[in-house]
Amino acid sequence: MKKIFVYFSIISFISIIIFSSCSKNPVPPSIDSKNNELVFDDNPILISSGNYSITRKEFLDRMIAITNTEAILQNKDLIKDNLKLFLQEKILYDKAIDLDYNKDVDYLIEKEKLEKEMEIKTREALIRTMIIKEVDNKYKFDEKKLENFYKLNKVKFEKRSFSEILRVVNDVNDQQEVKKVEKEIKMIAEKLKRGEKFETLAKEYYNGVDYIRKNSGALGLIIRGKFPQEFENIGYDKLRKVGDISEPFLYNQGWAIIRLDNIWGFKEQKEFIKREFERDLRGKINRKIISEYMKEYKKIEYKDLEIEKIINP
Image 1: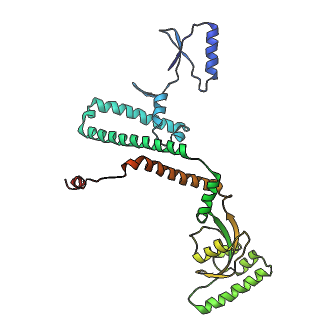
Image 2 (image 1 turned 30 degrees about the horizontal axis):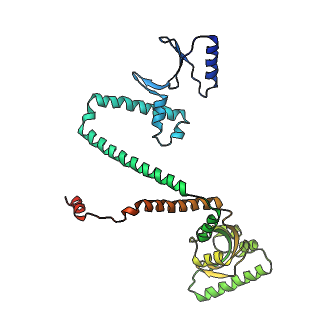
Image 3 (image 1 turned 90 degrees about the horizontal axis):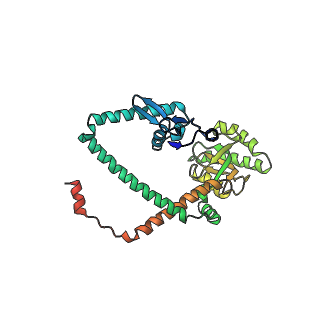
């Protein structure tokens, strides 16, 4: 609670009113009759029952330890729910002490356990803070290193979309069927070379899943590792630029011709790649820092006999 002492002159009173009206959450002053002072209460009571109450400061201090704090503080009903729980906890806590449950053996055992857990978490928080700060100090972004990172991991990051003209082979072990369908796909390939549109031919000749045929053979995004190897070898390794069309090839669905429709490379995914680069680099720095601090303690000796006593006391 802040206190502002003033003499009750007109000038003083006006200045106080101006101060109150300019504050973000103005709280009207009250008069402390004993000391003849104006008192500004910036820690008002939010909930009360009998002799118990929760102030603004108590509530906000408690909310630090609550998950979803931001959402709760934007919703009046959620604030009220949490205030009620907090007040109930206060009342029941005092009741438990009045009944001497704070001396109960079960409570003392649980309390000791919680204190040890808090000690461990506090230690972990200190270590985590140190590592994060040390990594921050050593991390430096480098555009060229980012580009090299992409080149080294291009297989992982590059994404492509394709369209397909598929002639299904029901039994790839049936050589007669394979040869028959091969003739069909080669005829379609000749039509493409003569300038007929891929979309038109896909709608006419695609005989796999019907919704793909209706969508002019568009398969959409094909990520490496999600499609048969023969398809990916052609789509990712043979086709170089958007619009390139493959020669007919056989894979587990049948004979196909595919077209490269789009490429999402470094430029299109730069922000995502940058996040992955930073995560990777920070991880390496993290491990290097820990290794540096632990180099004096590389030699570790286990006391096997004492360890076995834990298993067999």
